[in-house]
Amino acid sequence: MSAFLFLIVVAVGVYFVWYHTVIKGAWCKSQAKLHGKTVIVTGANTGIGKATALDLARRGARMILACRSKARAEAAVFDIRRESGNNEVVYMLLDLASLKSVRSFAENFLKTEPRLDLLINNAGIFMQGRTEDGLGMMFSVNHLGHFLLSNLLLERLEECGPSRVVTVSSVLHRAGSIDFTRLNAHKDLGVGESYLDMLKIYSHTKLCNVFFTRELAKRLQGTSVTCYSLHPGQCEHTLYSTCIYERGDQYGAGPSQLPVNEDVARAHHDARPPTAPLQEGIKPFSGRYFSSCAVQEVSAKARDDAVARKLWEVSETLSGLS
Image (cartoon, rainbow, N blue to C red):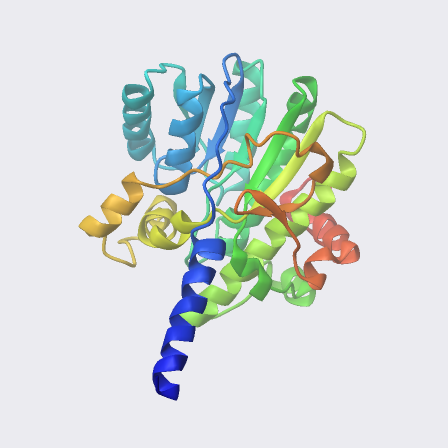
């Protein structure tokens, strides 16, 4: 075998291992039933969120689909009810690009729903722009909106414990960093319209998810609420047009930035839900990051408690909690 051919074989082997351990991940199996439990999934009208909501509805949960697009959410409610046989699936308006909408959602939920057992912060976006609050779009939708939502619902989660907060992050958090000087001055995590610029900002927001979960766990010590962040696996990467780009339509971004073709539609239909919400025996790992159904160590920078605490404090200020 020539040296060149040998390198190709090695490269293919490395990619195969990387794809199945990092990107695709393992299948997580749980027989847990959720009758009598109430679950919120943000961005549940498509992609990972919809797959997650369907799986949990099949287990008997009362599902709250927290979404920006009424038309898409109502279509998802119809699909999930039909496929799961569970009629306890409802839509509630939530626009994570609007702090006012987040507060309105929380107020409405707390008035109308007596329970909350599981909050899944799933919604995400991959686009530039500014929100009505003057915040960077990705920073607001991917982090700050969920930060505010979780805090506004914590008391109800504690009342119904044991309960969980699960935030969908990404393996891309490893490429992220947080520039607090920029964040304080401009209320965003980066600038630029190129794909690379946007990918950097997206990575920064995914690091925020990890820090948020880490700090939240510290603040929840001694309560009945635990929290986790996770890398969702294959579906995040195969569903970029439905889970990330197309979701931009819901925030007034105009046409999708990638075409939705038959392959994407098929991947959408076959999306696998992240299952950290249902894994048993993980209470001691509150605050940790999961991938492939197991706790994974994050980089040293993602374990910096001082940065996590500072991000929390800045987020309190920007969201109006302090």
